[in-house]
Image 1 (spheres, rainbow, N blue to C red):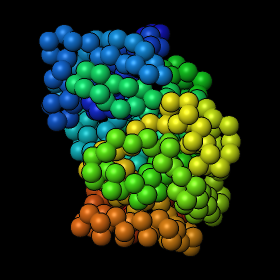
Image 2: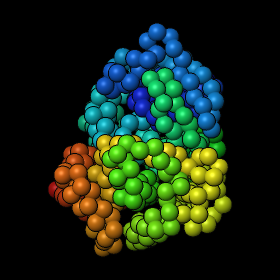
Image 3: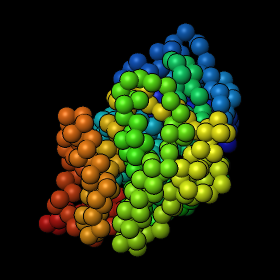
Length: 366
């Protein structure tokens, strides 16, 4: 492997742009593919991608016209679209993936790595699929060619399936992004390591009218003591599910400390400190936000399902699904395409635990 790695990024939104900037800054060669075909049009005339904020740089990313071209021209494929786009992107990439590839899901949602592995197994292809518990950075796309990078995380949870590939996959991630990864014990641990759904639930519930009115508001500042206590209570439900599975995952306090570099305190106090430092972020200015449309069906629903399987019913998570479904006039429980495709109701918790290491669900009648 040469020092300069060709990384194909499936996505052209905030996280895709910010991740491309991080890769470029580390000396690698990112390529962007917009599944819709519109997200990379700003680069057609040679305009560079400009990053500012926690990372300042300018680059001219290669642009792929199709999933096939992205796979052909890349050594590593990184999926950086919202959870509701994962299945479509995986379906597009799967026919073109080869054993030489390494796939990174940034960030992993709803056992998507299992879905992709099942698709590849049907072709007789095995390759490492690495699931991240969160994104390598946070950011907000400012225009067709600009991104504001809010933070580059100092620690990201990950695991790789099949687990025999774990060591080499970790080496690849560190070669790309540096020594900032914490290996976790399988996909179920990663499923419970993504705190965005629970955190975004509390933030969106407490600020839904700001979102609906399109206001400009500080996210960190508006994690007030009441919202902070809700986030802490949601975290206790997630930790209880992890303990029932015998898994170790980071707490919400560790998450904010490691992601945003603030001292450990109450969650509200940590967010106020983030706001004071200027990296508290800007909250969504629309109800059509991934805080709800992605994180409810692909985050809260998945956590709630694990809670039921382990006998640790996540009452606040379940309530959030119901409340948001009522607010939006949608059944978010039924919108998770990955879980529906996997048909988890046919499998036991032991089946899921094995899949968390192998990446494959054995047929229940096998």
